[in-house]
Image (cartoon, rainbow over all chains, first blue to last red; front, side, top):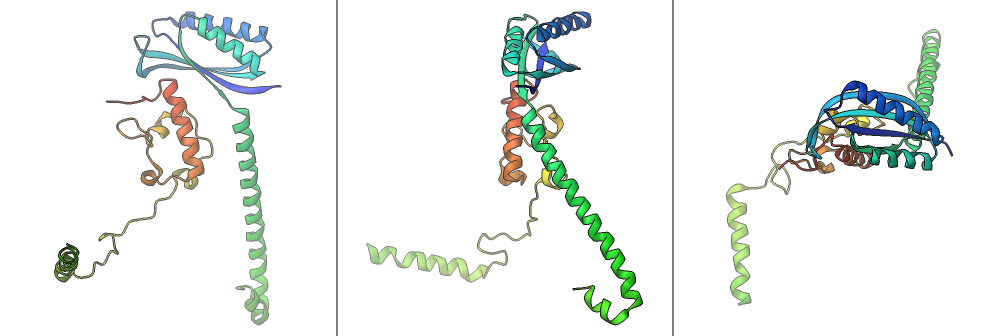
Length: 142
Length: 101
């Protein structure tokens, strides 16, 4: 079962950029080892934490988009837990939400199309009203 | 006892009602017109409420870090549900604070 997840984790701020890159690449190889695909990596940079985590006030945020089974993501989480420089992480499943969003978007688009058709029909009706004043004019407002 | 207590509220009501007269704003005594609140997410057609969007979420938490109730923010029920979930996720990853004193 392929699912998509967002895995966001915080790396301790005193780690250099190269080390973070190294960490991400090892994580990527580990993920492919358990049958998950890391689709994209987004470095969100250093941010002030809202509260202190393991005596750190700042953190280096990294966001991964992962596609794989639940077991694979569970394994990635386990790896993150044992990786010492990672101070916090969160995994959010996104495919269900994405499905819902696509549905909403589809409905919205179709509705827009309908309204466009209605507007076109109204535009087509008005010239007729101009040519035949009495009967068409009576129908158009109703 | 009953005879003593019974006239008192009536007299009290007469005193209060006399000088003030009927209130214009209804039974609550509200004098100004309050605008109907609308759901921000419905109006701006924001479907996805992500925990990463700290700016957006910050508008819906109180100074203390609490999630703002619907009666104050005017957010509709489905959106409030998603919003609160997003806020809780953001708290977990230290983007928002659980409480700020």
